[in-house]
Image (cartoon, rainbow, N blue to C red; front, top):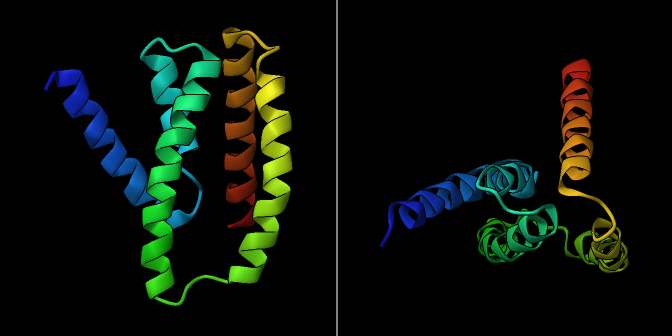
Length: 119
């Protein structure tokens, strides 16, 4: 296995830990990492979703065993998320990687300011 493969596994471990602990989702960590590795925005987002799917199934199983899941609310959010995901995937096709980086940075700063202000 190459150093990059080992690096990606270690990042996946950190993302899985962070996502399962905070519920933020691995995309906040994984997408910037993939962009830094030279992926185009569209490929970074799509690749991140595959990894997040695998991580989310594992995290759901763990939280389900601990009775930390409101299944009804989660399913309802998921139904809305299906529609939103289809729209979002088509929207990202129309933005350059540079534009995506800027928009993603603004989103991250906004989330950071929000959490800082609430604490």
